[in-house]
Length: 367
Image (tube, rainbow, N blue to C red):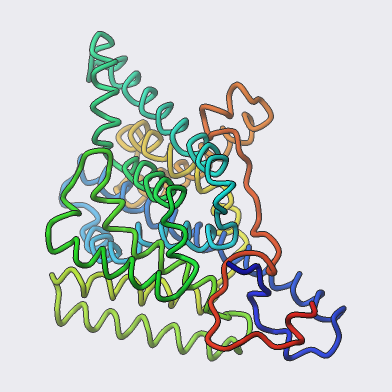
């Protein structure tokens, strides 16, 4: 594997000092872009669950948003897993670091998963929707087959487990990445995505989006093209995917193509928004706990459905963030709450996986 200069801007600058300045700018821009996309994913997920909660009380309400949520299935969860692959490519696991990598991911993912599962079951038992006597078997069942959004946490850990066990070698080349995607496509024919135990099926089904994120990190130079070109290219990719989705709706491979087109469109367009970045930097706590906020407030807030939706969406963003900000300095609290790890920006652009279609220039090697 190589640890290269991934944003190939080096050929455009004469001096190494000027190159370093642009690398740092690209790093900051890339980190903001990733956090903005995380924020978009969070908003889409909260909107999906919030509309569903409102419609439980008023089934005919918010029908237009409910239809939009159905269409956003091509982007919502694939975006989360795509970004996980993109960020992984910035910090790829090495053979000697595999155990430490896996321990860090277990702490970051499995500890909060166990905590939020216990918290949810405890709250359900407190309000008469369960029994404290059945807490242990209910917990085992919930871990074996996670419900709501928690399956993603378990599926993502399984992907990291596979990486630590040797799959990361395939991600060091374009051919290896394409081989993984092809293997998943073949597995889909035999029903691998229907395996619900420990979210194995979901991990397999969403692996191509993770791999696409890895490829995007190494191949796409979003900072090297003019903004209008990025916008037009992204819009064209998205339009092609949406048109094909309308023509061939229901075919799994077409759904995957639409998702990948939408994901690459967003990355190429490179959106940056300060408030979405702020949300994206706290995406883990929002992802884990927004459903509890929605369940607690949706049916008690006054007003028409649209007003209730707006209120609970704001609460579902702000309350988890406030809890994290209050708890992040207290390790005994933040460890079960979030795995004890704070947000980190992307590392230097000279780190991570890179896939080249031509040999690097001497100018790039001298940086």
